[in-house]
Amino acid sequence: MTGHGVGRILHEEPMIPEYVRGDIAKTPLLASGMTLAIEVIYAMGQGSICYKSDDGWTLESKDRSLTATFEHTIAIGDIKSEVLTKREI
Image (cartoon, rainbow, N blue to C red; front, side):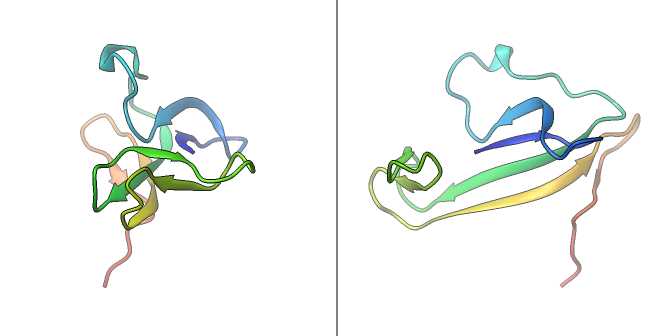
């Protein structure tokens, strides 16, 4: 699972990792005009994740703690960015 650009197709570059696996300097740079789907994993425990099954999709935390994934669509502007999927509660 990964965040991604949104444009003419739903999943396009840049790919935005849910968590940094290596050098943060190698992650994509954000620029004005981009629209991104940012996906985040929240974990109550250690935070390390693994694939639960052979389906290549289902994830769980290695310590089996409670986890959830959330996604928001963000428009990157010149001065500020806007959360397009923000919902008033």
